[in-house]
Structure formats: structure tokens, C-alpha cells
View 1 (tube, rainbow, N blue to C red):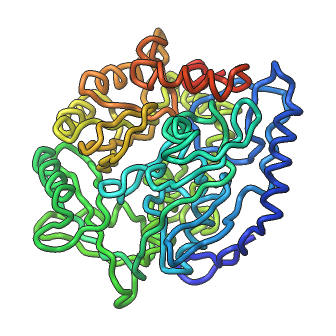
View 2 (tube, rainbow, N blue to C red):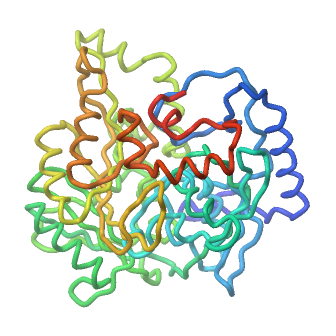
Length: 469
């Protein structure tokens, strides 16, 4: 359990002793061996950040108890040893106590480090630090064969180290990860720049990625929000001392609404580093509006401790179980809705083209932009090293085509492929099998599967991501 201290920050949990970690890993391995050979293997955990449905199973889940903490933080080497099920909320609390943070902190507190590495993640430092797995130095992984191996960038298990990102638990599960950390200041000073056309925004974004600055001022954090084809923003963040009273968007004010202005000059803001890292969690970006939480009357009555992604996830789970949203649509005489919850990456030079197309074809707004530049070779999600891509995130629903329940998602997949992009696999996917393996490292994945899961105890990536078995 954690205790809350100013600005919503939690006191760090005590470090996990080595003996307790070893015992937890032994329990995990034993629970894996106990699952029947013909049963689906899944983690026994209460939270998930996956949006795709999964087939039900009666088999017991993997015992991950005791694998949710931080083992150590080394402020001199700027590294942390972290258990695979540790949430970023707990990891950040542990590192901020030393004036440090992970190089990339995904937006939602319930995302685990192991989940972000095997399932990808992104945030406003990705233009300079890539994706979360690019700051991993080594990993202990329980493989499909039941062995615990240590994977590093070089050496015996280098193939697994490079192939683990985007494998979604189909090659194994990380029990310990050593990651690099970076220094942070007490606060983040923000500038929100308005753009009236998307080409200008993309040009400015590319210049910041290339130079690390804007108008002579250093940029440490960079993302954007598009409200329409004529109203879009870049938010530039700079590490800063805490000078004056910082803003607080965990109360009545909503962060993404604070970005908007008339464009006469940049709007400025100041957040504690803790609150900046979790600025999107309180309202799940803007998705809390689906529950009415952004209406002042409801917001006053909605307890502050429940304004977070974990609470909204529980509501989504109830909807999936009881079809609440579709039942409400039916009562209004409207058809069911197709869920369109996706993050895609397209090259910087194709970003305006994709966003303009999306705004014409898909009735969803706002959408999130986050530039990323990868520095390495990751065969299951092969972004070209050194090239700037832009993550475009959109999370809502549209009226469903009764003859093709996945019509809009298929349309998006085709457009992303046309623009030489990629799509994350945490949500619904509709690729045919041949096309899927062209995008997600087919030959390399097959070799990894043969070496680390020769009996196919774990689902393969296509079955998990597309067939949803």
C-alpha cells in the first residue's frame, strides 16, 4: 500500500529483498509447470491495458504475486532493477525520490514495466529516447520452455532481448528488468503552441526532434493534440525548478482543455514532474468524458481517488461483460458501435496526410500525436533506426457497419500500411495472417518461437493479437 503526499505523489514502497524476489520467481515457475499442457497460459492479475477481447479460459493463471516491486535504484549508475509486474506508478515514486525517472514513462499509472516492454509504450520523451524497451539493459525472462534466462543486447540470448519487444507474452514473461534512468528537475515548464494547419505543425515538430529546441529554448518533452484540421497544438516541456504554484489537473480543471487557446501567443503552464508524468491519467487523456466525469456537477461528486485510468478500466470491463453501451444505443434506436481504440505510427513526412485523411473519414476527436525516433533494431516492430515517426492515438467508437463489424479498423489498417506505418497490437486487429507476419517479423519470430517455446505452450502472436484466442 502507498501513502499520498502533496501533488498526488505517493511515498515509495520499500525495496523488495533479493530473497523475496527469488521466492516469487520460484512460485511463478511452479505455477507455469502446473498449468495443463493444452490450456491457455495467462497472467493471474487484476488489471490489464489491453483493449482486445480474449477467449475465456478456466485454467489457473500464472502466479505473479510478489513480482510487483522495485528491487533497487542506483542513483550513481542511474539504473534501477525492477520486477516485471511493477507498475510505473510505483516505479516513478521510487526513482523520483532520487531525482531520477525512467527514460520513457507511459501515460497510465497501471501500465507495468514488463507490459510496456513486451507490448510497447510511448510518451513525450520518445522523440529522444525511443520506446520503453530501448532503455532496458538486461532482462530475466521465464520462457515458453519453462526456463529462466537472462537476455542482454549481446551474448547467448541476444536474439530474445531484441525479439521480446512487441511479443505480448508469446515468448515469455519478464521477471526482472534493469533499466537506465535520467535526471529530472522538480517541475516541467510547458508551452502550448497553436497551429491552424497540420503541415505547419508537422514541420515544427520535425524541427524540434532534429534540434532538441524551439526558438532557442531546450525541449525535453514533446507531444501534440489535434482538435480539428484548423486547431492543433504542440506542447513543449522543459525541465524546470519549481518556481511558484504549479497547476493541478487532478481536481476540477481538465488538463487537455488547458491546452486550448486563440493562438495569439503560446500558453504557458507549470506542473510538478510527478503531475506532468501523470497528466493524462486523471481523465484517461479525454476519455473520461464518456462517463460524464468532465461535467462540473458530476466531477464534484465523483471522488477524486476514482478519477484515474484504473477506475475507468473497471467501467470498461463491466461494459464488455454486460454490453452496457450497446444496450443504451439500442434503447435510443441506434445500431451498436464499433470500438476504434488504436495507436499507430507513420513516418513524419506522411503524418499530415494521415491525420487529414483520418479527420475526413473517422468521426473521432481529439487525437494525440507523439513523435518517436528509434535507435535500435527490434524485429517484431521494425521502425527504421534514426527515422522520425509520429504516433497517432485515437480512442473512441463509431457506428458499426452491420455487414462488417470491423470496417473502420480495417480501413485504418489499410491506410497505415499504404503510408508505410505500423500499428500497435494492444487492441483489435484484422490483418490476414500473411500480411500480419510481413509487418511483425514473421521469419525472426518463428525462429524465436522454435528456440524459446518449442512445444508452443504459449499462444503465437497472430493468435493472440488477431484471433484473440
